[in-house]
Image 1 (cartoon, one colour):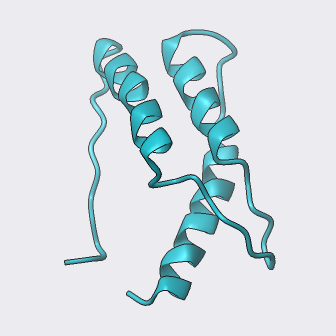
Image 2 (cartoon, helix red, strand yellow):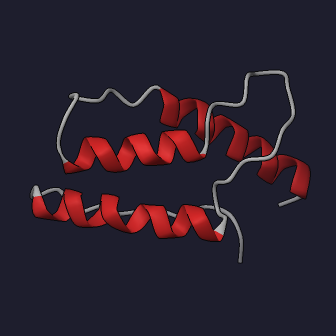
Length: 83
């Protein structure tokens, strides 16, 4: 996948992440809020860097996976790009 397309997917991911509804409290909410703060939405039609995929991002995802697993909803992912 060319870098331009990959970066476009990351920008889209920031906007989707921003729209995740939060309940207001709890470990899952706090973990998602941390990710939202780390990767704020990049507006449509603009370009900008995203922290998604950075080392800081991956460190911040662990609490989300653990909180979801503890709540009985383990996280899974499906890859459809890359090698």
